[in-house]
Image 1: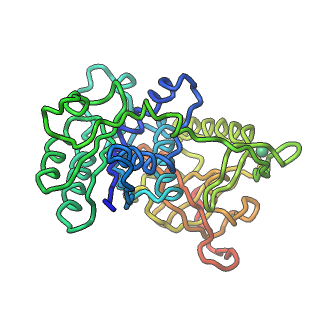
Image 2 (image 1 turned 45 degrees about the vertical axis):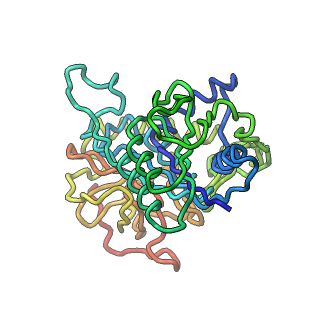
Length: 365
Ligand SMILES: [Zn+2]
C-alpha cells in the first residue's frame, strides 16, 4: 500500500478558507479539518484506480504575528487557536513561526501609508520544502506527497521530490493557486496526479455541527446555566455562553483602553521581562477586581500582567484567585515599553497543592 504524507501551507490555507465558504454558497460553511487529510488521500486513491492509500501524517506550517499592535490581539489569537486546534484535536504536526510586526498593525491598510514595513515571512515556505525533501530522503517514509498549497514557491521542491522517485499530488483552491500547479498539461512537471480542487469536494469536507447542552462556567452568567451550543470544548478548555463571552470581550476592551491611557494605577513600571510569548512565569496576584472578572499578576522584576477569568486554566476558579496568591502563567503579551501591562494566559496555581498565601505581597499600589 503506498504511503501518503500531507504537507499544508497553513498560512495560505488560513487566509483562503473564507473563499471556500463563498464557493459553497453558505457563509457559515466550515471545513472539517479532521476529515480534510483523509479526503485528500481518498482523492489520490481514486486516481490510482481505487488502490488504497495509507495516510501516514499531516504536516502543517504556519506563521503568527508577534510584537504587534494590541488592537489586533483578537485576530492573532484566532489564528493561534486555529493552529492549536489542528494540533490538539486532529493530531496534525504543526510548526509555527513568529513574524515580528515591531508594534505595528497586522493589515497593511491599517498601517501608515508611508510606512515601508513589510512583514518577513520566509520560514513557512522553507520549512515546508525542507520537510518535503527530508522525508523523501528517508527510505519508506512516504511514497506520495500531497501538497495543499497555492503559492508557486514550492515548485522546485515538488520537482526535486519527483526526481527522488516519489509521486506528488497537489491540492489547492481555485483563484488562489499558482498557474504552474493548475496547468492540466503540467508543463512545469510538478505533479503525478490531476490537481485536487477543494472547491469540488466541499460537500465531503463540510463540518457537520451537532448541537448539545453545556453548562456555562462564567461566574457572571445570568439565568439557566444549561445552553444549547455547537461548541465542543477542547481538553482543559472552559465553556462560556455567547452572552458571557461577548460581555467578557467588552470588559477586556474596556480594560485595555484603560491600560493604554493611564499609567499609574496598576504598578505599570517598565519591565525587563523579554521572555518569548508562551514562556511560563511565576508571580503574585497583586490586584483582583472581582465584580469585573479580571486582575493583575505582578512578577518579581516589577512587571504587571493582566488576566481575565477566561485566562484561568481549568480547575482553577476565579473566586479562588485571591490577592497575594502565588500563581504560574504563560506570557500572552509582553508588557509594553510605555509601561502598559502585559497579558497572561493559562494562569494556574503555583504548585499542585492548595493555593499558598504569600506573606510579602509585592504590590505597586
Ligand atoms: Zn453564560
